[in-house]
Image (cartoon, rainbow, N blue to C red; front, side, top):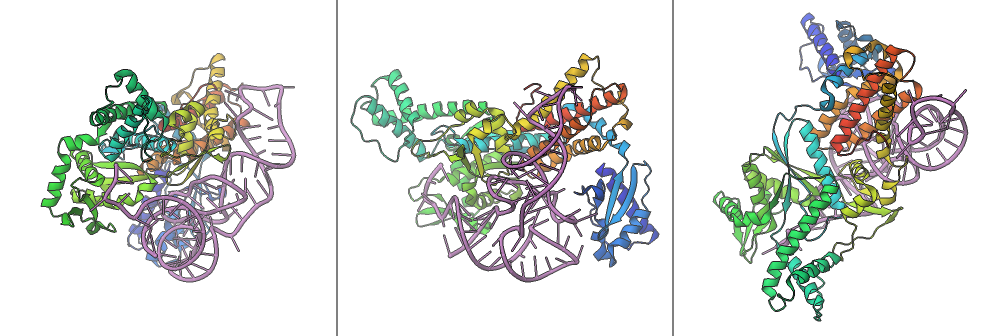
Length: 553
RNA sequence: GGGCGAUUAGCUCAGUUGGAUAGAGCGUUGGCCUCCGAAGCCAAAGGUCGUGGGUCCGAAUCCCACAUCGCCCUCCA
């Protein structure tokens, strides 16, 4: 509908130019938007006001001429008004709205998809937590946002791959092995003082016990061998647990990429050599520096330490080079907001690799404040006190967990209240939209008991859907594709929950005002078609969020 | 001290990238089930968009300064 109006305006302006009633200046891109106020029409355009400065003329006069030259050949317009400083307000005839539903019917499950991605290969890297402990609530938010961003991009026509980068090569891995080793010694009755720098969580002791049961005291006097083995064992076991936990959230990756591989294949050494050859790095004080300041970073960054070991950053450069070598046109990283300081250096790296800055986009996810009945739940990774993803999903369920993570802009702090999230009432927004879907299903069940088949578009009389509530519902259904598109383009999944909430609200209003199944057969068919379309959109939207659309609840 | 982000109704938050009288949910108050699911609907009350300047026909949105809060300023990951 928007496109049609844009076309009308374009044609009109063109003919004004031909007739010479408008000066041939730069014509800006025309915009049509939804006015908030009902009396301002169904759509409004501000072209006249934008043209005002270049035409050197009052906007209202320009608007008048544009309106006079609009030829509404399809006869969709009820009237056009010029209002305020120079807005052109369009009023659409009530009986043309339902025509828009045809598209929902023909596309079905695919309604909402677009092709702005045009098959571009995109990789979304997210979670990427160290395999040194179970995932906590903050990781869960990143996981759900990353997964949903991937869904959105897919729907927008990108070819998407989900990847988890396993930091299994640094110091923290030795620390993990050591932690298990000390617990292991404790189990055998040795008097050891457990270092403060080690991982304190109870899962470490459990791993030690497992190893003790399987291997006995074999490692008692072989500290080096023990740590090597236990690091490997613990990392594998913890990663396994992470994968299981992610699955309870509905998050599945296409690939897990190990940092160790980068060293094994000499990728880190190779990229350092390449940077050296191309003059992006220099030596100073026994360390190797990357000149990231040349790319806008606030200081240069170390890539090889004084002790000869490459930094995490060096591995990350190698990793990103690897990504681009796999033909990803674009790479999206979902990071915790505490890493925002790393964006400039990563962009520098990407540019040094000969890529455009835009080929790497970073989505920042703010920390989660976990509450129970409004009271903060204390968490400290170091002390091993935290609520894991598993505990959250067990308690509140996948749907409520995901929806709560997705409701807010990812770049703002989130209060996640365990009690609120599992309450099955109006305080909890998930149920509001799911309820709308269940209600639609219920009406359709009733209708089919009375012998109605679910109608397709060609079987209904769209002219019958003309009440305010019906038109409002159709209008919002019609904006779903552009909503998905915008959400994908800006990498802002939170727009979708807001949209569905609106949609559900419009549906409920319609439901409370009008009867779907009535004595009037034609009207019943038309309305059944309307709620069927509504259900399709709710289902499609919830699918993007990874939330189920129940038929009963 | 420097950088980034935030500041919108009592609370939690949106605000379509500069548009008309700033919105939603929760909470509060009052209505709506002999009738397709009341986990719902309708209505009311509630605002100096942190403060002060500036740009613009027009600012919650863009620019500058200040205030408060958070995060980051490792040769840790």
